[in-house]
Each structure stands twice: as C-alpha cells, then as structure tokens.
Length: 169
Image (cartoon, rainbow, N blue to C red; front, top):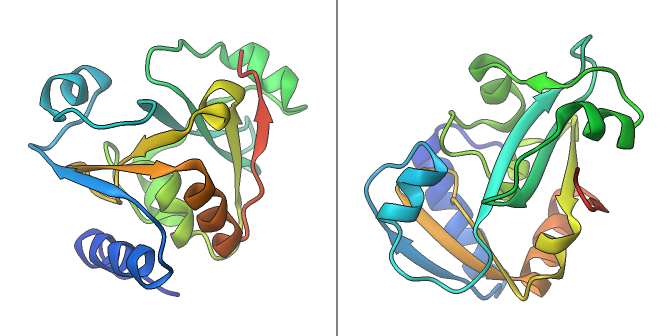
C-alpha cells in the first residue's frame, strides 16, 4: 500500500481500520507538536498516552520507532546498549519522511504503514504494551486515536512489524 501525502495517508489509515473491523476511538484537536501541547489540547480519551521517538544509530544504518509512556524520559545510551547498537540520536525530518512518511509531530505507531521495506525497528516499552488501550496520532497531529491492544497487534501484523517489547531505559 503506497501512501502519497499525510492527509491522504490519514484518511486511508482510518478507512483501513474500519475495513478491517479494528475498534478505535478518535478525537480531533488543534495541531500539537509536543507532549505538553497534546496534554492541553487532547480531549479526554481512554488509553495510555505515549511519546513516539524516531531514532537512528551512529551510522544511520538502523532506524527505530520507540514508543514509551508520555511522561517517561529516555536514556539513549542505555537504550542503545539494550538494543545492541551504536550511539542513538534523533532521526532528521528528512529521514523521518523518507522512512515513515510523516513529519515531526505526527510520529506514531501508525506511521509503520508507510514502512513497506520494514527498515524501521519497533521498540515498545513494556508498560505501553501491557496497557488495555494505546493513544496515537493517525498520521497527522490534529487528531488522536485510542486503539485497544488487540487491534494494535492486528495492525502491526498487517504491517509486518514485530515489536521488541522491553522496559525501555
């Protein structure tokens, strides 16, 4: 499935969720770019609030989408050790667009639909994985979706991404 733009991708994602019968709840809100923005702007919604971070290794050979609870601070050096990789740093907006087809502020697990090459490794904090529902942006930062864990598992299976579930340092 090739998705062309964020707006088209978001609409296509919602159609995909509905066509596959995956339960979800979605709320619209003003554009958000930070966790603080999201906490202020997002109406009440069930599920764990998440922080989604796109990282690369020192050589740019490995890419990671790391999903943690919204209030967790990442220790990139410890995470690099846990993933048996070199120094981790934030992926550039260009790299993010190239691999996940989204812009900063819209990064979420749903962006894996755009990673047909499976070039991005998914790392999910054990606390997020254990949650009954997970919140994520639907490929745009003007809405938030709450997705039951079973629906998340089905979505990941559809994209071919098997999560590495660890207590993220």
